[in-house]
Image 1 (cartoon, helix red, strand yellow):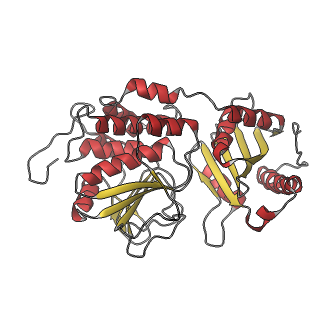
Image 2: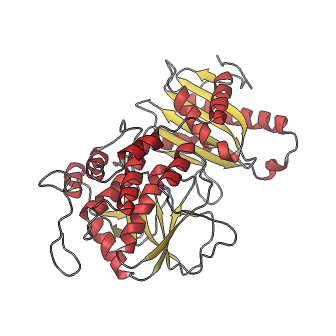
Image 3: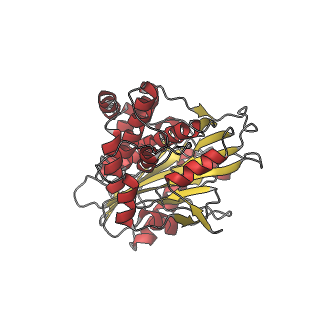
Length: 396
């Protein structure tokens, strides 16, 4: 590896004699580029740094799509650090509230600077934008036409073609944070030391890997190698504190509702939990995680109406044959613009369907009956069972 002035720079190795990228490529036999529908776009540390150098001095908007979580927060921080090495001024913006208690703790304890988008947020000064840890580069806002997608990095199956100058999608990685850790390992700028910034980024990335791999249950080689490297810089006490955050009372209440309204069909369990506040949205996924522990159940789906705007659901599975991404896309299909309502990865997925005109219905009880009947019948049809949808109690 060489610095810009040609001197050889050695990043701290994770295992003597071989870099993370070298071992990753040897194991996966992947090519050095990925197709985005308009030809081959380079990926990897060298390509990213060459691109960042070519746009030195520009302004970059790093976008977190969906609800901020440890993986996209950690990835965004790492990209911000890399961009700064090339004189690129960047800001990290998110469009949804940081609702999960663990994620709020992460941001607070590490003193992470994130901007929540609002109507007065000025996007006109940014030359480029980047998206990390997302299946699509589509944003909920409209950026100026001059603002181009500079970088897109993810570990999920993409939704459609990604049109960016740098695209790195690795479905064989358990987290996006691990990919960014690889960039830091191989960067021509040393990522090392014990400064507060280095500790903050390393701790956020480690938490992102731990979170997205379900405590390393679904980790792959790149996740383990990345963790080995990051362990030299993380604040282990702070990481443990963030990971041990207590479960909010509202999440416990939501879990109780999910248990009362569970509907079991073979190895599937469905549960509609009714209307959920915006700030409690992450409780839906936590309910699904908990219900999956029931004996004899392989797949759980918990859903509710969040903020009176969306039908929001989470899928968790330990089935060896069910692909959450394909399963949810088959069930809910696409909107008029070709965007899927649902998607996922190896063991989990989610869906979000706007209520649209029906959000104005004043009879919430009647609206919920209609929603639950429609959603449940879609599930029953998909798994090939018959039976009435029940508003509470256990199904047949």
